[in-house]
Length: 418
Ligand SMILES: *Cc1c(COP(=O)(O)O)cnc(C)c1O
Image (cartoon, rainbow, N blue to C red; front, side, top):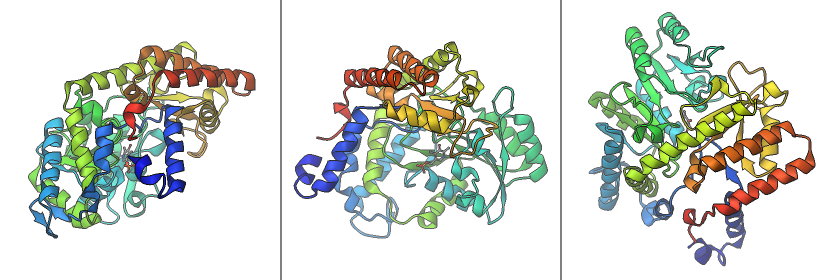
């Protein structure tokens, strides 16, 4: 499709898109927030719905001609409700950050206080970073993990909540390898009269497949992305069981923070929710977790420190600072041998985020590609070998070839439009 329509008309863009296909084919994608969507999702993403303005909500649009957009959005909502067993869903947020912006707008006035997870302990930019709207317009107070267990320190969280009486508490993360106890968060939020927002951007797929406890019925409002473990198109979504909150969320998304919804993306979301409702999706998530566990276990066998001592989800955070290396160096060297991952801070990191002492690795994309525990063990050994031989060019050349061999055994044809 892309070739047919682009090769002659715009060879400059076509060439780059081809290079990107090759990059995805010839490298091992271990960025924990990425995944590969199906051809059905890709095709829907490029449908003519991109032409349609549908400001408003089904049956309450500002423009005419929305009858098909309505059907699509209603289906996306119905499927998401079934997938998460929740009463209300807004499928319009363009991204996870947009979903979070809408929640802030719905519940918080300028300068109101909220509790979020410290970025260097695994929190997200939209949970109060000073370079983000959440840290500029509101007052964040950060909780984090216990220095020994590297798991959420609920005692400190409780103390902070009582001391500052925040308007909202956010339970959620981008780099935390353990189960979140939403009930504990709720207990604290209730005691201080705070709204509990669960940001399940990373673990939405695990929750949908019932491999992680759900915040539905516990958190007041839940935000997520649709493109991480959920394996849908790039986008966001907001859920709640509370009708009053639902109304506030709808107005905060449109007209509060967005204009016209991306109807082609909402259609692709619906297709991916349909996929996630299939029994095979549960098997997929089961493998995602098994593969992450094998990664963590192999690192531990190789004497590489794993933050919190392992993983319960799809994320493995390794501490390369303990090997006198930086996250930036290891991530760059990994890239050179064909493994894509990101540098990350670890709890109490002496390095700034641009350097970091950790590398965050994830299993979702490669599990979609078809890799299993044998390959994940092999990859953990390749990464361990690299860490031990980071300045040895000959060794690195050999590791690069091993990566290429794995890539060749798992072709990517199922994940592109030709
Ligand atoms: C990825 C992520 C987001 C933001 O999603 P985008 O689609 O990149 O805007 C928000 N919150 C958490 C916890 C995330 O991990």
